[in-house]
Amino acid sequence: MVFCSPYVTTFPLTLFNMFFQPASLESSNIRSIRLNPSTNQVIVQFINNAKTYLYDNVNSEAIIDFFFGEYESAGKFVNAYCKGNRYTVVG
Image (cartoon, rainbow, N blue to C red; front, side, top):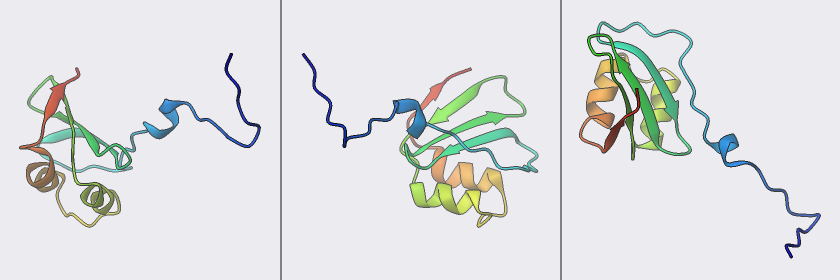
């Protein structure tokens, strides 16, 4: 039997697994980019490639800085903080 305290609120895991996408993206190499600072993940789809990559262990501060416009180029962000990290092809 499982007891739940009325003072403890549980949230489904998907609530914390949300990716954010910048409203506008101007890049000659990246079709789309989605960011999740809570899981340190970035999803990138490149223009010249049909595959979509999920990068893990991306610096959360860099993700937040990119989302708020601290980087002038999405490509520079991906090259500096995503490439070289573990990735999975998801599409």
